[in-house]
Amino acid sequence: MENGIVLENGVCHKDTGNGGQDVWNCENGVSSPSSADHLVVMVHGILGSAADWKFGAEQFVKMLPDKVYVHCSEKNGATLTLDGVDVMAQRLAAEVLEIIKQKPNLRKISIVAHSVGGLVARYAIGILYQPPKGVNVEDSSTINSNENARGTIGGLEAVNFITVATPHLGSRGNKQVPFLFGVTAIEKVAGLVIHWIFRKTGRHLFLTDGDAEGKPPLLKRMVEDNSEYRFISALRAFRRRVAYSNVGYDHIVGWRTSCIRRMSELPKWEDSLNEKYPHIVYEEFCEAREPNQTASEEDQCCDKIEEELVTGLSRVPWEKVDVSFHSSRLRFAAHSVIQVKEHYMHAEGADVIQHMIDHFVI
Image (cartoon, rainbow, N blue to C red; front, side):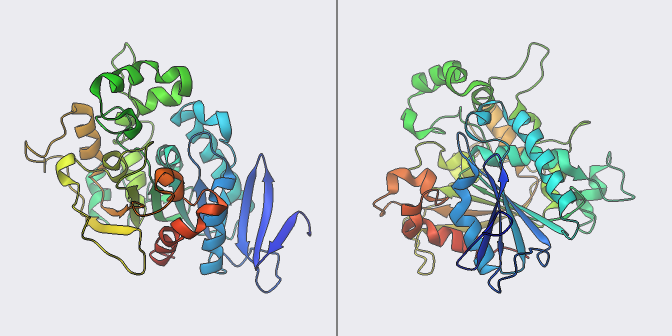
């Protein structure tokens, strides 16, 4: 150990305090990460910690040596994840700005986020978004029509925005939280009492946080640009957006909410087979669709707010990667396996991380 840096199998780890960790490649014994100019921020989910991304972080720096500098977010550990998506996002944004300040050689930024961390990251990039110079931010059509005028995130070029089993459409819709068995009565009760357990974050997830003044739920506000934060412009700033989703056995986050699709848009995957990535069962690129390109009546969601969330998020292109652990002995832990949260999950979920790295844009 040197200056708090731990060298293990060509990978350097450094604790950053509060449980966070920076990870970079140092196969040549060089303990300085100065050659990497691409910051990858990894964000954990509810009641999680920076350690949840340990395997993923190590694989990124091993496979992309001297290209990426990985920071596993530390500011929202454990019960701090119950403080609400907006509060967590403020902490994450401040954390990212501090890293950028400490590493002046950084030129690019990517986000990899698991579960609720994906919502936190979406809000945080809205805070960090800086519009392109010379572009009127009030005229969104100007930004939309110019691919070279994307704006930046914290002053850095935005490259990959990747979510893994993230409840983009919230958790209140039918079968959006599979362990509630799709029983409407149970789902309604859960929406009324969820804040007893998950506090403000629970309200955000079940969209019960609207106020008496008519302010819409937070997730609804996050699919629009507004006078305070430009959430859609921030998403559009990234060169690519990717949603990894479990098609089944994820008892925390349903397939529909994590892949940003309507029920009628869910693909048939049973016959899919990918030899290189055995747990990847379907891949799709979805072009951007403006709100005036509405879905047909039979394709629309039965829930009005859910339909608005799908429509809003579909204004930017998405790569959608569907994952199944149906034949895995760990299938009932799919929500964690897709992230490879624990050491014993490496053999099952490693191909998903490999797919992520192989398609990662540097």
